[in-house]
Length: 122
Image (cartoon, rainbow, N blue to C red; front, top):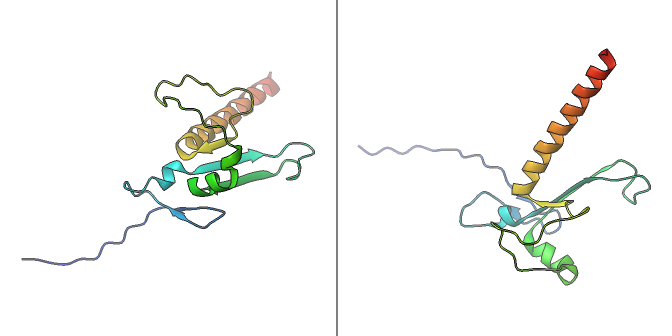
């Protein structure tokens, strides 16, 4: 016997803040994987306002269109990189990198709070 049933699938999409392109988890479409997530806390005297959180999700097409002529693209092996990030070159992330950064920031914040609490007790 054949039956028909309706399934509702909920999936999280990210929308490019510039062009509004939807980037979803579709395996055939690498847009979500190739998006650049910008997330940083503005510093003292910043044009973004002291201490404000600044965020953007930018699709690879907009990144290339807006910043392409300013980007230095160097061939490298992602599994065995010859070129390492240095100094402050870690403020723009792709999704797979961002999750690790957020987890690390959360861990460090919790660690700092635990150390401060212990120091206050002693």
